[in-house]
Length: 146
Image 1 (cartoon, rainbow, N blue to C red):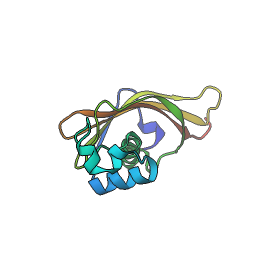
Image 2 (image 1 turned 90 degrees about the horizontal axis):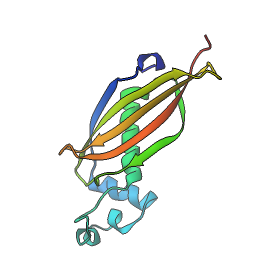
Image 3 (image 1 turned 90 degrees about the vertical axis):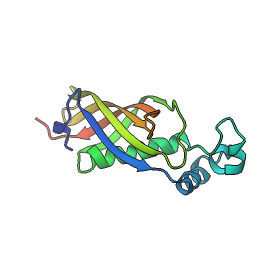
Image 4 (image 1 turned 180 degrees about the vertical axis):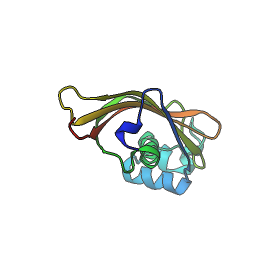
């Protein structure tokens, strides 16, 4: 999608993305090697009752779905940050994750008219409709001067 295709109130959906146990463990071993992400036996006896994905892995899956659904081929080039990140429920092996992205604000920068600013909320839900990620993102787009 191009920046001009976004509008406040718009809802973009994508997925599902099914997370395998092998992928969950591989990501965790590389980037978040805590036992409840990497050791199925130990995790089975934990408060989680089994392996759970790293929250950062969950964010990466959301990013992939957003790129596939909206940012591929766009003028998007950066993000100055996030307003919040929440993981209300854990992601488990075999979960089918679905993205719902709500566009909050779309505007051109007053100071830099070649910059488009998009604020949106990304939420991921598993197959039981439990929210597993809630994040508000600001994305920047390179635009032609008008």
